[in-house]
Picture (cartoon, rainbow, N blue to C red):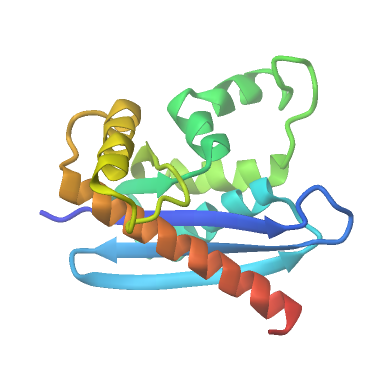
Length: 182
């Protein structure tokens, strides 16, 4: 049976500057059915947009207890869930191992609450991989994808995940354009 797959990306033009524009994109895919979401925000950060993409995708779900696969090129999001950072943050009163407040605490709290309502597997994707690259380059990227995510993915799976990640990136840029009034 098909699993619901979610592909997300966030972007921020002029990240780290006082005046910037961010966007996020998400694709929900169940078999041949796809739903695309996007949005944007002024004066934000890339990390906030990465978090928002996953939050908005999960908020779009109408049921709890679903088996989901989430694919993201954000090591910030993926490592938090795959390595259990959020458990340590909660135990430490939302402080990092360096005794500093966790950045984006309110977004993390919202995301964690949504994620705990589902059965999620998180997968790390290399962002901005061109599917027009040589077979040799794509095979190297595939091997890295397997190294990050395990042996259960075929080369065709990798190509599809990459295509969807690239589409999520384009959706994030649409969100940026909308905030700019383009």
